[in-house]
Image (cartoon, rainbow over all chains, first blue to last red; front, side, top):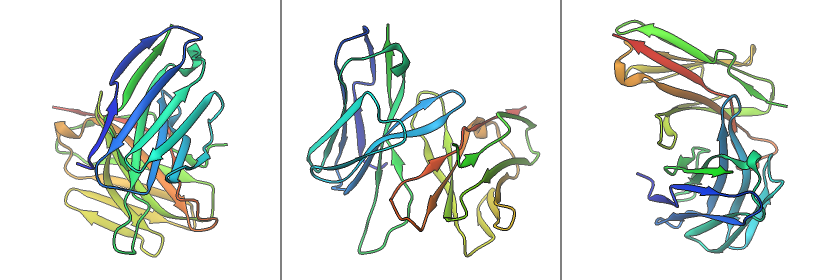
Length: 116
Length: 114
């Protein structure tokens, strides 16, 4: 258990409304990631963070923004949701312990978002 | 352009037999490879990994083989059990440029038949 929670776990919203998904971790990991999972595409990186207020874009960042004001929380915002953003969203962390690391990431339980 | 490819969307295998999942990659800078397992309505869970300095890594029933010259890796599950029915994702990361990111394949759905 990597100590990652995501909220909400399920959400249904309408096109054009703003939506914010939250990822919370309890172990002060520096690196956090947001992915979306869609059939035929696997997991695609939306945005990631390498520290408080330090974020960067992934391969499918259009229409999404992120914020990280505290180490433990990484927020993903859809400013104006579209039907193409219907997906399952996963948050992940990458541990870094005692000066050593691997590239292994650990995932949260996911948020299923439906945009009508 | 997908740099990690899992060309078999699905695999059906009988309980007790071997499951072989394949993954190809195009980026020659990839040097660390991982397999994740995902059950419905859950997040992916880390299964096994291999560094490019090795050609095989084993953990219980799971073995990953890496063929760098062919840019190919495979996951062997022996023997397959009903609980192995899940989606399996292959992932890779690059040493240079080192950007702390993973590239994932599209996944292979494994069904283990009783």
